[in-house]
Length: 134
Image 1 (cartoon, rainbow, N blue to C red):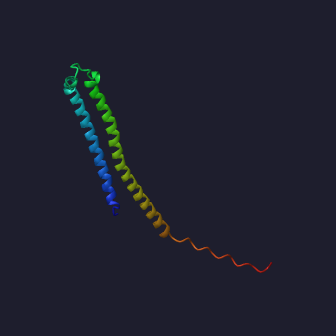
Image 2: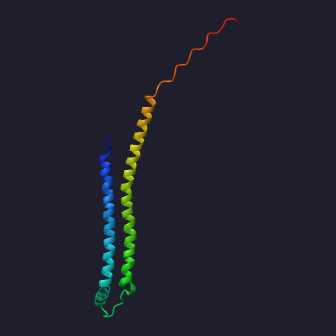
Image 3: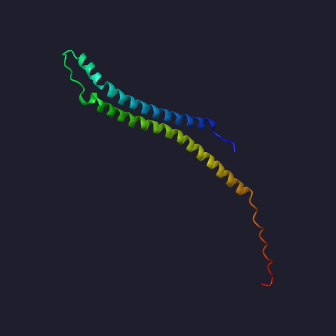
């Protein structure tokens, strides 16, 4: 049987690939923020304190360190994960619609074949002749 909707299949595949790529970038960026917050958390606070004209820095407190990086990473994972899953689901939805069309076409073909290739019903016998004795 010939495959229909080749372009829609391509679009569905592209959406699925983009969803996977977005998910991978989400994980990589979350890991990058965690590493950056661990390595550069204190350096970032020192830079901010040096920029303060009064000489003393207010600092970012707990948000400037590791916990801030972990919180930011969790927010990125949640948001990016939802976005990646949504894009992947869109690709799956395209494939679902194509499968529904194929199933409908196959069912219609079977019903058409069953309707037109069935044997005609047996002829009905003519009624017996009526007697004229009444």
